[in-house]
Length: 349
Ligand SMILES: [Mn+2]
Image 1 (tube, protein in one colour):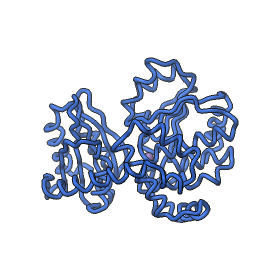
Image 2 (cartoon, helix red, strand yellow):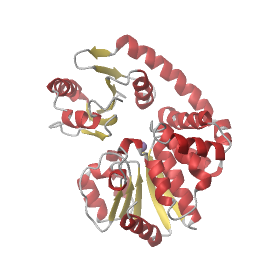
Image 3 (cartoon, rainbow, N blue to C red):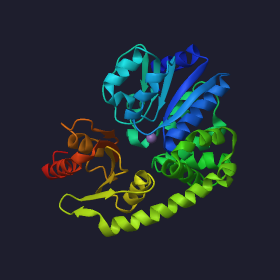
Image 4 (cartoon, rainbow, N blue to C red):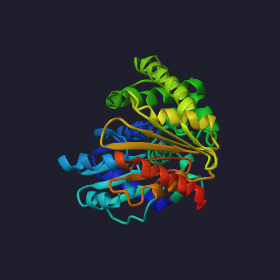
């Protein structure tokens, strides 16, 4: 890791006695928040505030009401919202630890952006924020006892292959199996699906409990509920999803009871890794959120979605090559789909 970035990171931690965390509400995001909080605790400092956030566009509302000295943003590409970040940097000191696409060279004394792209040759989607957080914080404090948390984040973000020996070693030293860690990642995903308002409680549990206690906690019943919902929607997908054979695209619009989209598409992409899958989730609001997956790296999902929202006001999109997401006003869904198809046809990627 470049010394200059570690130095800025250390200075940031030295400058405050308490921190405000904003983490992505998924397995990798929560694990990043746990690791950062553990490091802060070891430095005899505190986390004042922590919130799970669904996407970068959910960030601004937090800063309109509150005046915050600092903001630590984990596993969220806040640099994709440049105007917001510029505005935020006039109000708070910002630390972003993230592994999504790097959007621009945001240069400000008050903003530190740490991404795998600047420190290693590993494809950024395979270097989860929780592992990045672990490596970064480990330069300051000893976090050996919490390597299993980074492993849960790694599993949650599909990066197990890349870090197999790290995950296996950390499972062993926590006296659990890799399977147990997978189950914990599923528990976090289930909270994301069934009960996202329980993230603060889950973070609390991770701060005090060992892996076995997390598996035995009542959060495991949420996992059962989410798995039932998942089975239902998978059946629905194979029956009713639009398949565009020439473009290698599955397009599926759902109106689910729970926010099943991410869990569903992550499960489907394991079964159909060499096709583009897009799921649009209609929860009845003004906007429709969508996710895209493809595991063979033949089409970049981030560029595909970014291209499909060009010129659509109020739409956002971004992410990784194999996994990306975004949102659009509901009346633009058809236009969005047509742009996706024409991008795939053009072969511009
Ligand atoms: Mn992540």
